[in-house]
Image 1: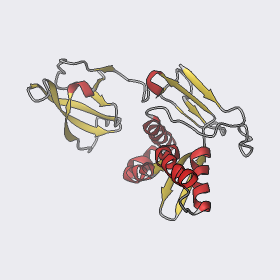
Image 2: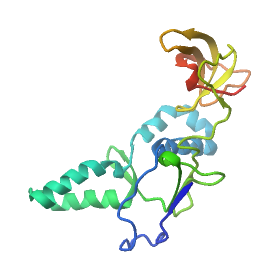
Image 3: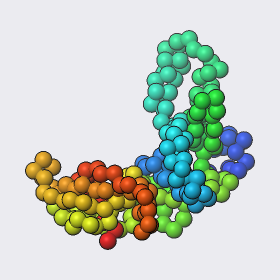
Length: 227
């Protein structure tokens, strides 16, 4: 496992000796979204249940300025080498955001800019990962947990050609949704087992509930078996 530290923080206003770019390991955006949802749910689960769509609107506004690097390189060549005219002030702002800003939440009439994290830990294939500690940490103490670029598995990942018994509790890792397998069959379309799952959302409901599940179809290998 590799780790990057930016020891100059929290005195981050003096950037002369700090790296001029910040490369994000794989899965970082999903990990940040997952951590924010968990923190909000822990603070006020009732609010999150009622405002779930609003929470996802908030998270959809998350962008990572370093993702602009490829386009910025082209602009830099056109401006610095070819000598094309540009708005110098706007160009300096774009460079500053890419070099110094970790995340931006953009909304109508409001924009929240976050500094870069001072510590990143990642595993093979450039995936955000740490065991028993934050994989991404900011100077104010806030951090994000990650396990091989995602959440730590709660159960056993289904293997190829593995049948899942109807009634089995499962989780869809890339969305964090929980459900119960309704039907599982071998599909000639995908040459593997396919399933209908009754999903309940981010958690299983209690015994007495008016929650109505929603049915989706997923390949068995995309599921995590919880039973």
